[in-house]
Every structure is written in structure tokens, then in C-alpha cells.
Image 1 (spheres, rainbow, N blue to C red):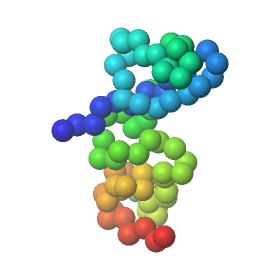
Image 2: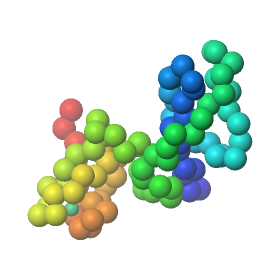
Image 3: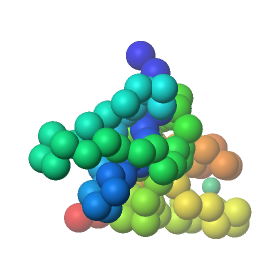
Image 4: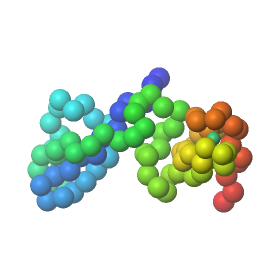
Amino acid sequence: MPARQKYRLRTRSDREVIREADPDRTYVDRATGEEFEVVGKLLPLAPSPSELPWAVENLRLCGCSLEQLVQKDVNDCPHCGRRLPALED
Ligand SMILES: [Zn+2]
């Protein structure tokens, strides 16, 4: 099943969440009762082999000459197709 697109949602008081969302729906913050505003679409766009948001803590260099950032939970570099080495803890 393809992953659904994740969005960054924010309230007026700057509470921010990241969740799968339908941009045509209204989401309300249960804690404050404020409406969330969609402020951005998260990369990668669905569908993607990765479940991780495109954030620095989830990325590493693939190690090939293209020096592309790839998500830590993918097995093959999406840019060059190189098999990525297992992550060390
Ligand atoms: Zn690569």
C-alpha cells in the first residue's frame, strides 16, 4: 500500500505536528482547540520507499560520487542504485 502524503500542520500559537493529512479537511488541535493550518508538504512525496520525513536526522550520504542524501531506512540509493551499507549504531 502506498504511503500517504505527510503534511506539516501548524496552529496560530505555533504548535506544529507532522501527520498524514487530507489538505481539504480541517484538523483541530485537541489540546488547544485551535485549527491547524497546512504550512507545508513533507518531502519525499508519496509514494516513496521510505517512511521517514526528509529531515536531517533521518538522512545520510549514500557514499557514491553523486554525494546525494538518502533516508536511513532505504536499502538502495535512489540516485545511483548502489546498495547502501548497513547502518552502524
Ligand atoms: Zn548514490
